[in-house]
Amino acid sequence: MKWLAFVVAIWLIAVSSNIWHYGTQDNAAPADCIIVLGAAVQGNEPTPVFAERIRHAVNLYQHGLAAKLIFTGGTGAGDSHAESSVARIFAQRLGIPATAIYSEANSHTTQQNLAEAAALMRQHSLHSAMVVSDPLHLKRAMWMAHDVGIAAVSSPTPTSMYRSLATQLPFLAREVYFIHHYALTGM
Image (cartoon, rainbow, N blue to C red; front, top):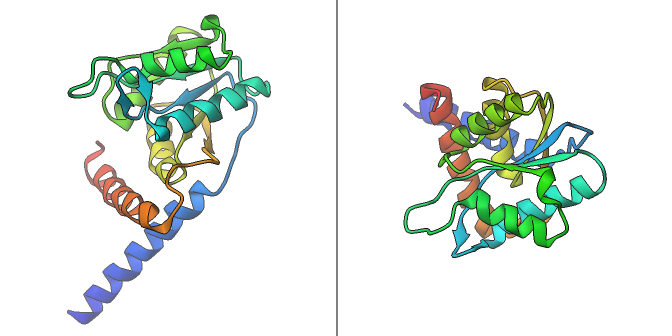
């Protein structure tokens, strides 16, 4: 039984290390669009985590790496505004023209975010994307992006709100759980 516990521990450490390392790699490159994965909102403003995702995507756009932004995320329980709508307004305040933004307000999970983004890409003849999210979220998100047919690279937020080990470890543990959940269920 000890050997099984040892094997499981080694496996979890390896998966955690892989997720952590993946999030340290910024693969930003020219693409047709930038997909910003949704996150929570507070009223009509993005939470600090979501604001960092939006700011990073705006920076990539302003550096000419893509001509379009796709904001994802529906209305969460108890919210009055969709994540994507809040992101659109926030990005416009940062100087992004409305004509450069597509959004969807139907999704509530990372997998749904990416499926809806893929549909928008097909609708607007966009063939490549950069996916923007928090570093520890990107390994699973990129797996899902490829599974829904998005040709994508990842670009983690360099200014994640998850800075301290005390905030990063719970997020990492959550991602370890969800990557296994996705591997087993496809959801």
